[in-house]
Image (cartoon, rainbow over all chains, first blue to last red; front, side, top):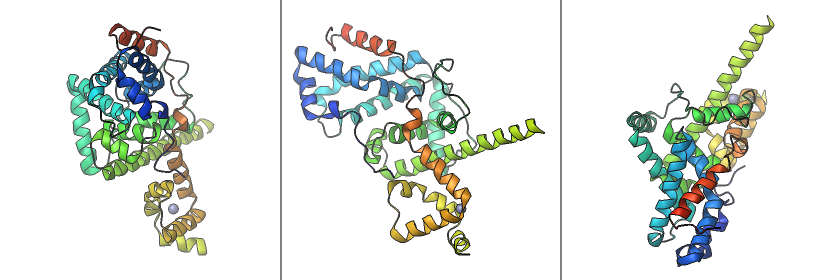
Length: 218
Length: 88
Ligand SMILES: [Zn+2]
């Protein structure tokens, strides 16, 4: 059973003392910023790469996000967690990047609207090219776990972001809603649909596999 | 006979729509009881809920396509050049 709030993997940088070090200025702030990057970088890169397929673009977006953090720190009032704010910045940067690519932008807005209106995207399998798909680390395709990973790539962009924020990165419903600027109830509905989509995807693929096995036996 | 009663009492679709609240621990007492009774008598819904639980569990992403260390080095260098991060 899952609670609404998981333990915060970023607790170290979300502490008020840490924020104080970040805004203090001088060498102390530079040191704290380095620590912020070390603690958060890979999680944020993983978040970004679910929406963008090229590793150069992912790196660029993450760097721009850190620049925006640095620029906005003096105005950050600490009303949300530092990392929740960073997710919002990353979300904006992803949208900017997708807007640059006209087609992808259209896909984002249209599919978001369609999903919000109908809530049904069972036929819209549109896998994002796996990033660095040739790496040895890519999981074997046969297991349910790897089918789930595959299904997430086939989710529409908004649903994928919601799923990533809630189920992969463990943000609370409230925090995910703040990042995406939508009512928490929509996050809940979209997350449930995303999970149902994943289950259906896995079931279909498993059915295909058992049909294939049956055919190869006969 | 008892299991059949509960299968009929809540259709499978409805049971599957309770999956979210079930994972959040937010099913009411009676709904929770009926939910569990249905599962006892319905292997299809058992499979469904098991997969739903897996879909909601981030474990399978733990080893997915890890980030090569060059990426963080690159970002740190970029921020050092801008004077945002101090030199090591
Ligand atoms: Zn059932």
